[in-house]
Image (cartoon, rainbow, N blue to C red; front, side):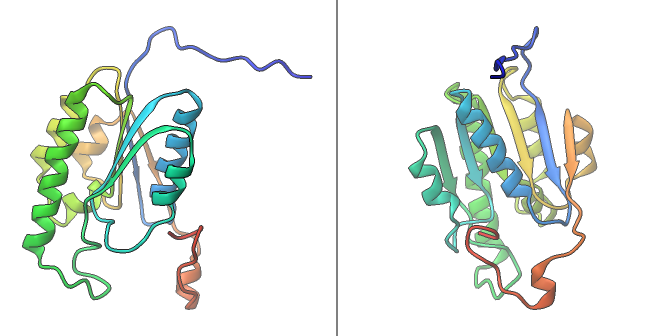
Length: 186
């Protein structure tokens, strides 16, 4: 039998992690971080900037886990695509509310990890401002981990991050006309 060792860093530091790119799996990667954090009894807050109009399996999946995870979907869907009926102004209002919520959660001291899902998209679509995102990064508590997901991460966000992963699409079922599948795509 192999002995399991728990590593403890000599110096704890809250990291800024950016998960970007055009491949599938940015939110899934962030949810994997959440599952790993759960194993360490860490407290996680996930704020979804774009998701909220279509059901996503993580909403009920997290409820079934015995973890300290708060998931808040603030969005009205993806702005300007797939027949989304909301105006840019309505999307921006929601995203601005999500920014204020992220700042509140960050300042509360209640969370070890804050995941801002699709914030990179929100920035690219001008639903949030670069200064707002940079302020969150620069003012996060020293020991809090901050995870920012979504396509088109801004170069200044990438520069401030400790870890950046770019997910590249090699092949996607959608390109073959296969509709999104529960448990895999949402």
